[in-house]
Image 1 (spheres, rainbow, N blue to C red):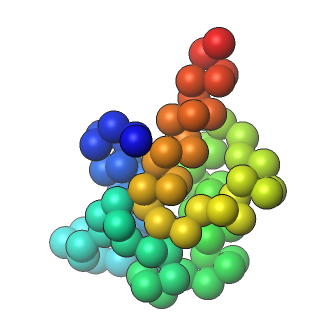
Image 2: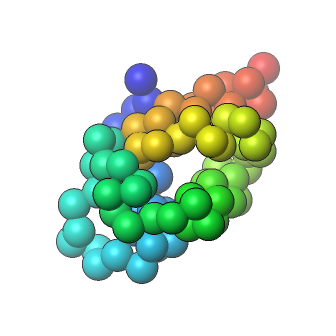
Length: 84
């Protein structure tokens, strides 16, 4: 389970990529599709996350991301792997 600050950072990036207002409710449970993201938006979100966290998300991993929490969990796994 990702740290709350990672989830918050992911939420912020998702808001920015989808041009959502700052006060829109984006939480760990938020599904990208429910926030209005299509497959292209999801790719852009993943690219934004890669840039922000200095990681690289493989295509098959990217396809498993449906929620903010999924993204945050994956990011922390990749960040840990990069440290190792």
